[in-house]
Length: 428
Image (tube, rainbow, N blue to C red; front, side, top):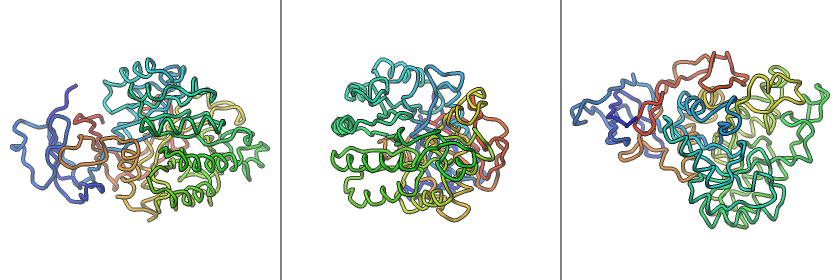
């Protein structure tokens, strides 16, 4: 479907990277923003535009998620590219970056091209990371240069930590050469009993051995050091422990090249390990939800810039995946559709950050880290826009995602996504 001319009227335009904070209009032509300002008339469009009255709701750069799982190919009963894109649009996301832990893993230019071709018609921009190592086994490096040339947005073995330090160093050197981001799932399996459950008070109550915090801390410490040594840009995924935050804070003080970036998921800044007692398998996630002290450390890290990305780690699973005993069920929570509301409820409304900062964390910063043409509403920018209300709420009775594995199902949360426009087309 071709992009048409759209005139958004009466919006509270909020684009922190462009210094825009005003009530006005946005004119969209040929997939890009033609003009932003006050009192733009339909006549200025040179044709009859589709008019959207924002009703003084916010218009901001569309959200960018650099960490999600669409399970396509191989596990499309959980999610496919089309259902994942629909979930993204419903959550206000205009760009998503899918992980490579599909079946088979995206580890060749041919598989990558196939997935990108499948994603091209979707209503939002669906990008794809490729695997760092062959079949994500952590034994030998893929041809990162060929994969980058084939369109890889970045590289990750997400879901499988790379334990071979020499191989990680080699990957970082090569990624730095080709100008790509390496994203790391930081959990040492030798320090994990039952994955997805924090080793602590709750694991003891459940009589399970859990995932020790050191499993994350040790690997983050290693990869921070390697990034500074090699000059590779890294994205530390789903940070969960307070010690990890402090390690990143200290490393960033040494980082003069902007190499180090780190994510927090809405799950980790919203919930603690006690959610496992209430929601069972629906709160089982890798790395696990930890303590209130950890949750507050993550929020403080987002507030002071130590942690610069909010990423969903959208991880769909079928009911049969989750309806097993806690020790053996799959880990993961869907997140694309609830992320904005959780950010509003747990970060903005309590006063930890303001709305501009939330947009930086969910749109501007992720786009910048991955070198994407997104995160702006200035003239000439791609028309990737989310229109949302902070005054209304959303009850999450059902989801556009094919799966519904989340503790937030049935919950009413603040905020409502009203429209998502991607590439000048209405996606939601």
